[in-house]
Image 1: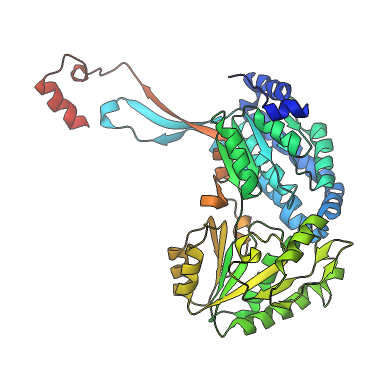
Image 2: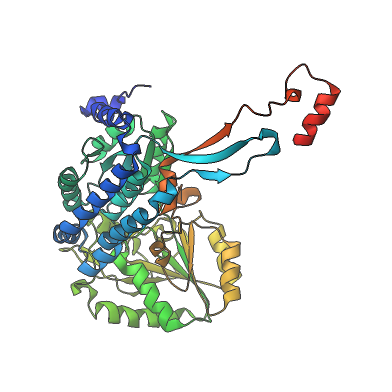
Length: 468
């Protein structure tokens, strides 16, 4: 089916049909199927990251106020590690995956053969504008695809830098970077793709899925939601607070897998709050708004959104803002109304609600009444409590006695469930996401038994049953 722009794309005067066709033509030459091409492109991407580290870190600082350490750990270094892991395992991933063959098909052999999908669209997010754009691209290259990359317009410095660097290092016949906002994204979604990979919010995720449905295009949606964090009354409170502060307030809370709210048993909430306050002071100083290690809110519109969440709330710590940066101090809200926006919407900012329950089972029931989260965290010294939480809740990922650390393991697929997303990536899971795992059975002409062919008889049926 040829690519045709949507009515909106035509009205906006934007059309990327020719771009997609150029990539499709390049893909059809078969060049991306070659293992050497894939490795060369991955090494070129690595070189791009290494040679331009200074400019990359500056762009992340300009867009989100990311300190160097945070930018290296969560974005630049993360991608280098991803490339290293992919190169190490790619020879194995591309090989046929042997499976058994039933007696009825003997002599023969069966296997699964990964093959590229074709030309894919990758739409990045603004909160980790480099990692969330290039990590899927690494997987797409490894699987042998052509790609269009759409950076987020809300992180303009990173978007501009990626658009500048990619053509300098990568095979431009097989990749294109398209900058822009709603009109450009809409025009891209109007085209026909072999896969769409989107990272962002649920509302736009629905738009992406609707657009994909027009061409029956498969999608991977990495969305988000409200990731809960259980803190058992029997826990190492000091370490719990330290790791909770690290995971919640990295990138000023603008992380899809950040703990969105904490569940504690009644009577232990103030002890936890005091431990968090102490740890916040250790990590960001007495005035986090002046800390070089504390990030910015992406723009004033999002800062206003976060301020509105605090209206009528019991703010027990923080709440101060710096309009100039812009940013908001780490903020703790105790017992917010369950009907409030802060408990209904993904916060995506430095506000941490704490709610109390009578028991861990009450907390589990609370979580299970709500949409399935992207991540779930639980802190306890008791393994039975942790196992009970894991067994009786559903989430994209679980991490016990820490936050977000599962992202460091490329052997663990990352993805959501339900409204928090569909599909997964990282490591081999990413390779598989951008591959078609083709099933193959190879047979010979030997032993062509006649009893499977008509005309049938009771004897033939009896023999066939023995092989089924």
